Length: 482
Image 1 (cartoon, rainbow, N blue to C red):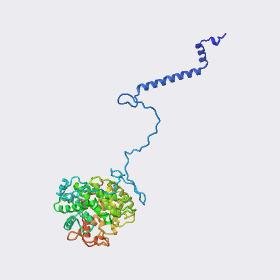
Image 2 (cartoon, rainbow, N blue to C red):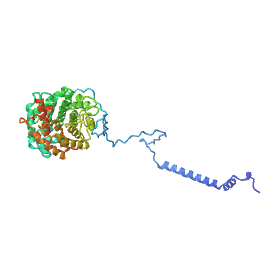
Image 3 (spheres, rainbow, N blue to C red):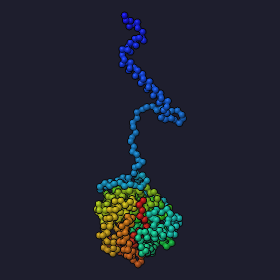
């Protein structure tokens, strides 16, 4: 007879229940094993893994667990290339170009030019060792390689031989410089009108030949010219002329000359003036990246005006003075030049296609001057320039003679080099050198309607300086691609 349930022991009752349910028994054992294994893993990691953060003073730092919003995504800027803001222009979108500047793009110049620090206007005192050695015929130390060809007789001769210059061209340059020496005004300026521009042009001619206030033959002439420019610019708080229609040309040409002088000599007395003069140009740039008469800010810029501002800013860049806004202004100017270039490669006056013969060389030279690259716009511009030369022959006494265009074309073709330069050199060099008057100046051209053919010393100075600068092209600025 079976035992009553109450009389059975706990152990016996458990055994009977386990025997009655094999699945329960298996499940119980499995869960026991899992619990044991999980506990072992936790214990092992607690012993072996170091804490995520150990304080310097020895104690572990335990942060409370909390839910936080994920950090904002930040792009990796280590490999980004800065491109200037594209100005608002009424033309098809143009690609932004890469800047070489390290100055912040949100830099804003003061609305009112600051006073130029008073400096001595006597150019006869301090000259650097580089300038003195250059005056003696050796290369100037610290001068950019692009200007190295002008630094002394040996360098000029080597550059002329390399670039296809002729002896008669150098003789013409010397005769022209001597004419400028003889016709300099008593106060150091040149010409009767537009003195800032004409004095800037004349000074550029002497500097382009490597002449400084220390030079044996032309030193006193250069000194007087620089004295006048320094005094004029200082009196104008950086401005060489009023911002009128011709004033924007005059200011930029004079500023260009002073920038070149500082780069060649590192004469600290002109540093403040160079900074202020180019600050005016930076402030005068219009929203599209060009420049206009009187430094206006209207809707249409002027490629002819822009050419001289760009040349001055490039000279300012070469000074190494780090003038705020200069590189940004040049970047923006390149965008504007793109807007001005038509599909046939020509550059317009106020818009693409609105061109004449004289402006394509402006666009090509200024683009190359800053970008130092024979990109598509430069190549197309050179091809357009040479095509137009067939229509407008390089004949000094011809009806289409245009010294302004030839000044830019000469430099543009040299910088581009190759067959373009060889062709242009054959066209212009003999024509300019052989057209010089016996007194060293250049006579009126056969061009119709050009102010350069007006009677008087101002037009004569203008023609002569442009022709000298053309014949100095072999060594004045050397082609570089850096």
